[in-house]
Length: 226
Image 1 (cartoon, helix red, strand yellow):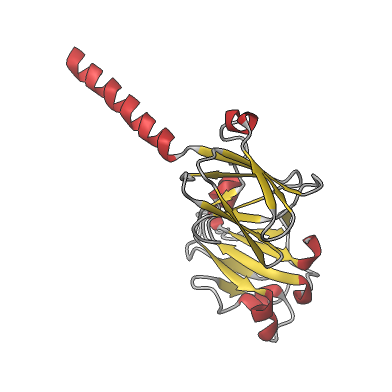
Image 2 (tube, rainbow, N blue to C red):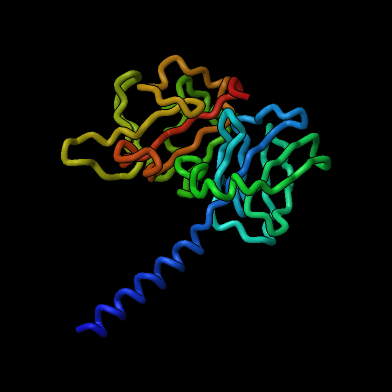
């Protein structure tokens, strides 16, 4: 009996250690050369679909960053490549694509997962550019999305649409996803001008937003926020 309990404790410690190694946090701050924070920049390593979006303070958080990785930073269609070079945190000051200053900060390391929650988007999504939506000839966002995303079903007339991303309905019959415009939750896309849209992200799983995200999310990114 004692042996079994001891074995379970060892396994729990071992599994916890592996999990911690896999989930090692990486905090960063993105600034202009004069120290002004850069908001809404996309920071990623392997694919633009798995990214962290900087907040108003320029903060971003990632996990699983290897010493040999290179951070890619997307700002207004410009991509900056920043080698990690073994650092465990980064304060990045950007001048242009080839001129930047990077330093590691022990205070950011000690913050642990502080910048990671709700900032790291690692859930598969679908991205539709504003140009593609405008080419549809539709007058509203939902009409322009119709038929463009696998599993996305829109029924009903303008203003009374029923939207379903996941293909399943809840017991209460509500399958409506969350709606966001530039990271601000909105009740509908009424009045949204298609000409203002940079791209739209469709998330079939939006657990980062809690139980409300169980039906997914439609996230609109506009040119106005840049």
